[in-house]
Amino acid sequence: MDPTSPCFPDQPHWAGEGTHRIPFAAYTSEALHKRELERFFYRGHWCYVGLEAEVPEPGDFKRSVVGERSVIMVRDADGAINVLENVCAHRGMRFCRERHGRRKVFVCPYHQWSYNLQGGLQGVPLRRGLRRDGVVEGGMPADFDTAEHGLTRLKVARRGGVVFASFDPEVEPFEDFLGPTILGYFDRLFDGRELRILGYNRQRIPGNWKLMQENIKDPYHPGLLHTWFVTFGLWRADNRSQLRMDAKHRHAAMISTRNTGSGQAGQATQVSSFKATMQLNDPGFLDIVPEPWWGGPTAVMTTIFPSVILQQQVNSVSTRHIQPAGHGAFDFVWTHFGFADDDEAMTRRRLTQANLFGPAGFVSADDGEVIEFSQQAFESKPSGHALAELGGHEVGDSEHMITETLIRGMYRYWRSVMEA
Image (tube, rainbow, N blue to C red; front, side, top):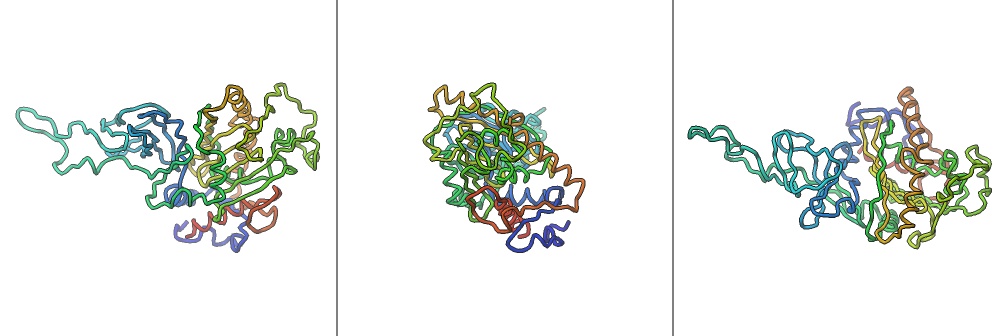
């Protein structure tokens, strides 16, 4: 595929205002995947790398990912948080292997080049050679300047205890990147309270990374696919809901308020996933306590394109980090957290409700499986396309869930960047 040509010149349904049919090649083309990495992950966008609470003390670090590039988020002695590419400036080795740790310096094991916590080159073994019999043998040339050989430093944005980074030094300010609407939902969750890390889930999903962005921009499926959601009223079509996007339609928020009735409301009982006889052995899964910061909605799922999902499902809160691994797989890392002022009961409640999510979650296991099955079909039928026409062909905010407007909006943006 010519990288200068339109992505799909033979796909008329991409044209116009309603981007409502997605060619399967968008999920299966390696050439498109490489272009996505450059245009969405390495240029012009902010990508999630972690939470400040994961690196509370000087020297604390977390290994993370931007696109398919390994990076290190580290707090230095001055309290600043730096994000450094995990590639030695000498021979290009990915030198940091631990997920978390504490260091005064980073040392590449290959030739022991060492770097400070700002990424500056600090030491080069045998830089001045080896003196033997009065003669200096080897060493770096006289014009070798350590200042020119540090680790690649990313631009960093911190807000509300969350850390984003970009390889693009000219990337727009983070607040402009989110836009006022999505920034409001971001600040609703990350309002300045100190965060407390509760745990992690990790999984590799054999599907294209965009499918998870789609999944959490799709309010149509939860009340159909997820037995748990529809049976216990946590998310279903008859809940009061809103869908909101930024001006470029790349980010979105799905907002829902739980139906607190008997579980028999609306048309929920007409779908096969509704199980009227389902009972809980542990009622603690539905021990839901409203929190003042909710402001009404019991669930807000925010997708920040391209790299992260911010989850609030009743009392469970987490980030979900999308880490592409080729065109047909991605690593999905869940960071479950609470707040430093939570009492023991609320911490236990958040942990209990987190069992709905993650690789083996009562809800999220369904999503990983349907993404895998979808990718298998795309690979077997490269000439096919997916349909996103629910609610029409247009793109805009909505006051209901029976629409795929957020998916159409994302692909309108996707195509504008990919074909620019």
